[in-house]
Length: 515
Image 1 (cartoon, one colour):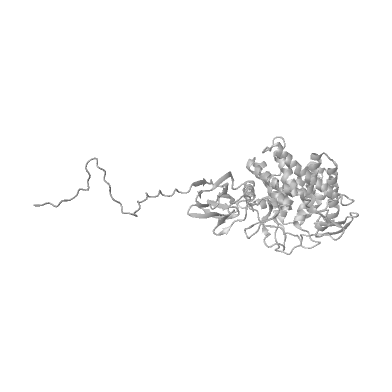
Image 2 (cartoon, helix red, strand yellow):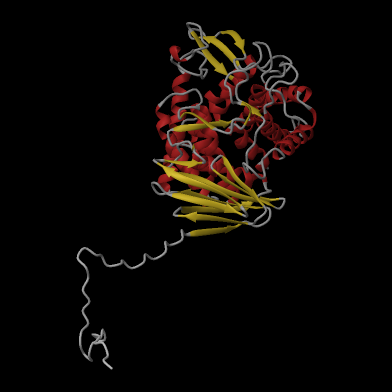
């Protein structure tokens, strides 16, 4: 039987097998390795605690934030962050916001900048993606100073360097104004207070960055320049440049803060030369006083809060005449803006030529003869503070009279007053007026006790009631640390009624920490 011949495909031992590959055919590439999973950072939030981090994304980066079964995706587009197609406002640094996580009543709330992302029962928050996470800060979610401190850190990172934080309305957006604005005083003021109370180097760094940003504003003679640098610079000097400082600053930083205070003091002195009585008007430039008639200067009760920087400047510069100037200005305000019953006008207009009083007004109040609640509060605090610094019985009496009017007319038991005491029922409230008045009442109580000139008990009780009301308003979960129910201008802007304003938080911190 014949067997068909077959060529064996098995080579002989040691032979090399060569298989022909058709022309044009490609070798099969090796399989690609599976993509690496994105890095994951996990943050466990303890009950009744808060943890915050500064989150920054690289260009075109993305991150997924998870808690329990909930997740939110944030991407970077140009210099902004984008959430669900909605772009964050420009912040301090490109593609950067503060991530704030708090756990209260069994739920964890996650916020990024002013936005609330997630509320979940899980204690753990995961950040998936190539994000840079820095400046971790852990605090109580119940303590009011800690809550305000977390909010202040978020606002610092969210604030562009060239504008001042003005507030957040019911629209949820953060609102800003030009940097040379009185509202620039209060975010650094709050940060310095948290730094001092909690010995927080992080808050001190943020506060100093705020002061550094404001150096450009010192070039302008704005109405509240003393107010601004009292909070941004003088308070920083008291926090970090004195013996046994809570968070010591460098000699160079301290010298910088002193220079800002001195610049403010010199500008206030120059403004006092515009009239024979040596009053400190809102501006020396007639065109910049939009409420003035030709030949007039404007003096407002708010600007009693320029005086701390003027008094400190007297020490830094070594010129006691600045103390005399502060005292005579405060006495003039007491004589001309406080009515016989203790109610206060906001504005006084005087002649440049003689300093004679022409008329009074309430620019931000309900009517020219009404009582603007924040103006009354400015008077209580401004006179009490000046009486303490200047040891002047006449200013202590002015503080007592304005405080007595408040206690007779404000809502009982620390209730929030309307923006103006003459406004119709149901008008916008102003929690910031209550915070300012509360601080003034506390200072007044201390001066009454020190001098024996008045009974401190009723003023101290009213300050305690104000503190209790306001601390109860500070958000514990979503928007941790937000203090609302304030009014900046009634009937003016569209967002600023029942709003957060920065001076409310600054003064509430003063009220909480007052001794």
